[in-house]
Length: 185
Image 1 (spheres, rainbow, N blue to C red):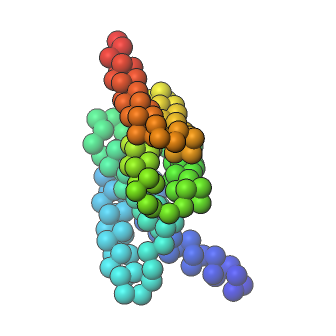
Image 2 (cartoon, rainbow, N blue to C red):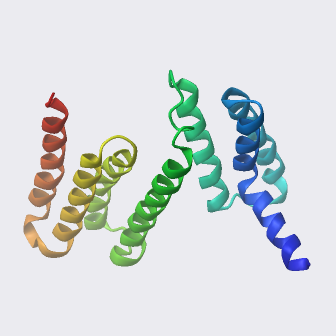
Image 3 (cartoon, rainbow, N blue to C red):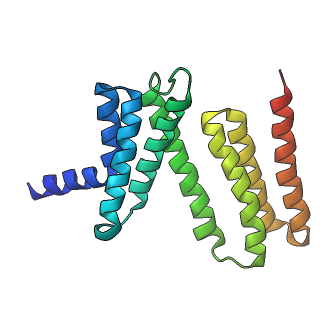
């Protein structure tokens, strides 16, 4: 029984705003759900400020609740509610995988932040943004982002004295490719 209570408490603490959004969306509609989830996040944040830590899971769940709620709020026809389950499950899982991969590359693979590491960090941050945008807008951005980040990490390990030039080609080529792909009718 104690394990069940601990599990329910964990769920309420980590996914409270998401649960508020889903319950209010099912009963009162999208606008009430967005307002309710914002209120739940603000109240829970005020409570956590002194009593409980802001865990990564809580920040991710609250952020995704606000993100998808805001998308439905500004859309002329709420499209995420129609495809909510597949969109949330697949895009969220992919976003977590991207965040984990980005963190793993910088925390475990490369490790410390000296000048050469910083020269590689910032250029990988932009392709990471492309990859995240590719989850929601166009798969081609996901491919460009992941390809650019892979080229930069490869340049970090194997380019030697040509490091800056290789990074310029990888990042610039990614931007040029995305610009050309956005031009097509």
